[in-house]
Image (cartoon, rainbow, N blue to C red):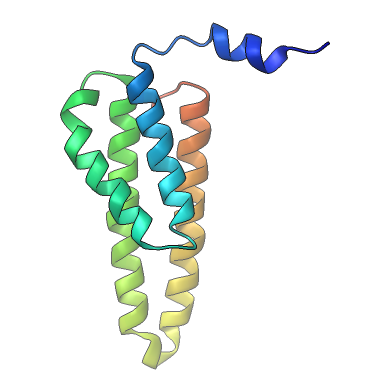
Length: 119
């Protein structure tokens, strides 16, 4: 019987299980926002409210990453919508969408490995 996932999960030290789960929830909210946009807003609000709690932990870099991802994506989407009448907006919207997916996936993979993200 293969119990690898249970063994792997039990060997990963996480100093604060609640912060771990909270960071995971925000990544999930970001992914869900691809279908229901408002969840990204909920996620960034959580980031800002709990930001003092993650100071000095590996989760601090993930919160900063998630916050930057939200604001840059919002800027890209606004710019894209404002320029759709020039047709270039559709390209900007698509590029922002792809970039957002990349950021969430890259952040989640680092989170899953217990690694911080670059500033």
